[in-house]
Length: 141
Image (cartoon, rainbow, N blue to C red):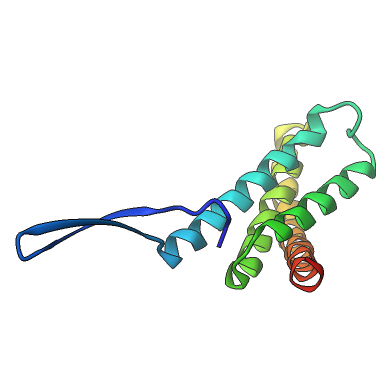
């Protein structure tokens, strides 16, 4: 589970009295981890195309690796690691490719094929990075 836990407000009516308590849903935390990972991947995928320091350089791979490791350090629940890494890598690769596309409309089909081929590879790399970050957390922290 993330340290920032998403709570659901649950009301129970029993014997005419209303009790109010907080409960954490496992499904809510799972979906929240995927959404956060996809958002981080999309943000840092588009970021290097608009910053002159990281544009067309190998330093953005280092940045993406550090962010993937930090994301793995941040995840507490081991069941969310694989899906969070896949969503991080997929959206990172896809938004990087889309934000860097500056060609004519006749090249869109070839570009779409490139996205279909490279996005699963990015998802695999993202899953490995997030898993390594989570492994480092479990082993040393």
